[in-house]
Image (cartoon, rainbow, N blue to C red; front, side):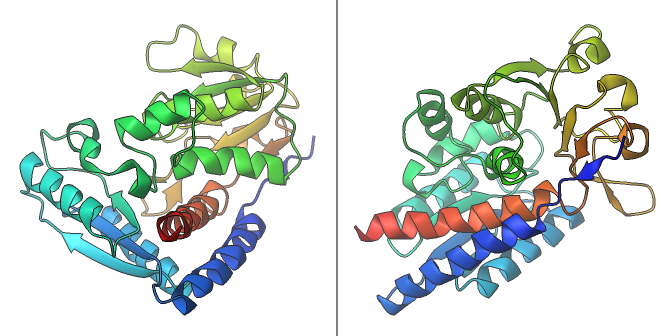
Length: 283
């Protein structure tokens, strides 16, 4: 079987073109959209990602402030910065970059982000709005999975989707988005008994656990669609996913590549969220 590559570059380009046009309209109205990236670590991979976000914002006409609180920042310091940015009328979107300092979790501090500016949908309020089917920002990575499937005309209604990973930033919000598309959803995690038996029964498998090569050919039934959300650094410094792509190709009908699949769509959606937040603030 030929496995189709579900690339995200074309979709990301279309989203970015729309975002750039809308950002320009806001700038002409007197206020370019502004994103605040809050960082509290000294992680090289995080620094690379923050820099890539800043460049993406600038290309689209979005102002971007990077606030480095340092790897020894306290939870109180982080919350105070998030609260200050939430109250700042010039800031439209806020993103808190992970990892956070030792002993601090996203759940400890994310509630300080105003839901109207929580462009990556990480706060408890944003997650609650999503679960309730109400308007709010959704975690961009989760949204990217659904948008990529739609872009490649892969139906979800009535289909069984197995999501491997239950994080608040991917697995759980993705499950809510898939339910809204009328899919039947199974969330798998580290204590799932016989993972291959569960995932191989699904029409679509989404790997989002943060473990290199976790999903292999034995986890996928013939003709299934596989979405790889993983972005892991391999021993040689390259970026690889959660799927053992070589063992899945030829068995799956389609597979999203890493890099070039979910990643560019996630960034594009995050930037679109910033512009949407700016538009709502102006109305």
